[in-house]
Length: 197
View (cartoon, rainbow, N blue to C red):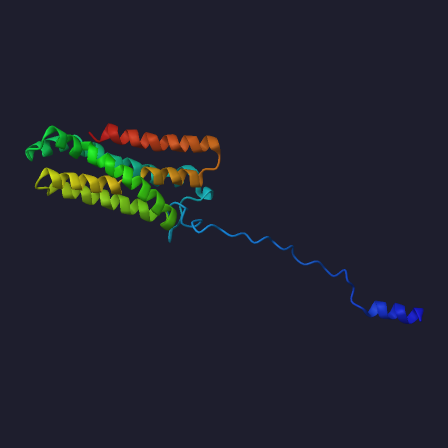
């Protein structure tokens, strides 16, 4: 009986089988994990750290520079355009900067929310397009109220600064490098106001 039990035990498959690969925990990526990558698209993710943080953020710096270069270049001549339309001092102030920054306040919220949903690159491109159209609209204005509407459009679509700052936070993980990249964003902003007028 002992021999039969030993033979039956030997014929049974061993319970200590070869262990399989460890079960990896299922991680769910947030909905905006792909959309939050700056400038992600058919040409690749220009914002991945493997391609270099400084070079990857170069389009973001240029975006801030071009965006505020348009404002700083037009803010010098807008008072004269307003006075040609027989505008009052208050209307000149509104057309020059007041309406624009009111639009910036609205546009920054809209652009920041939209960039989390559809991605950074579409929002930045749409912003630059809207700013360009608003400057073209200023050429064909017929009264100061139309000029204010054009400036309001430029302010709303010109809210790229928070989007660019979000790009830095998406890409740069080291605190010291993050501060350095944010300072370059502010430097691009200041350079636009130095060159534009």
